[in-house]
Length: 301
Image 1 (cartoon, rainbow, N blue to C red):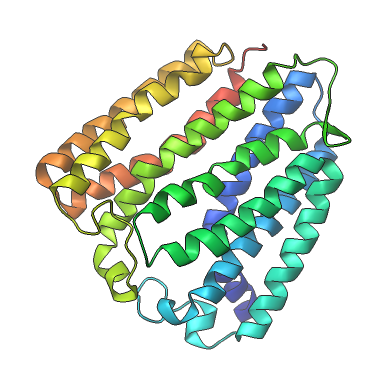
Image 2 (cartoon, rainbow, N blue to C red):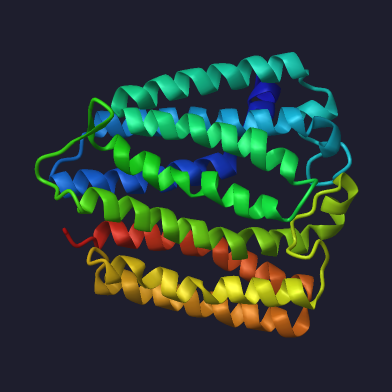
């Protein structure tokens, strides 16, 4: 049982999945805060449904890449390439998680359920095969990667047919807030994934993955990592600009954006794995911290 739990955690990429669930949960609580009441049972259902949907997408990803994972040091110990789990078992688990997770999210809100299906498809069946073909995979992957705030936010509202049922929230708010949350998370993914791709470049090459902007660790890729890091400064001002991010949130976002920019600039000058790691570790901290601060510094529209 202990070995199965360990393999299951690796199949669903537990740390990544929990990060995604955290992002969706914060967006749910922001949507609930807009309405003046948090339905904690619904929040629990979102957490469970979001975990299952994300785990399913990661499971499909590992099934598709099982032979490639054997070639990389960072992934060769996953259950499929190591032989501890066969493809049929992983497929059954992933299908079960995808179906149950989607049904849970649909019960909360139709839009949230629809977006969850779209995210599984885009991540597993579009982004995953593109990783070997073109650096555009990072752009494509940024879309499903930025969907958790949308899923979580809409899950906080009751469905009204194919739309939302809301009374205490303005129509503009239910459009602006989730789209801004989506945009911030979308832009964040470029310095995040490009920094990881720089650090893991040698390992990625063994599997034929092409995730750096120019497919190699050169000056152009370093410049684009810097530009993507620099863009986090204006991205962090979006909630304030649209009227729902307070001063504390804006200050934390600005500091995070400046840190992104500083480390991105250092990496552009030195082009070392050590400088890329600083951009990467900044990305690990930036998103959950700013989302958490926004939850407590949200200004009603």
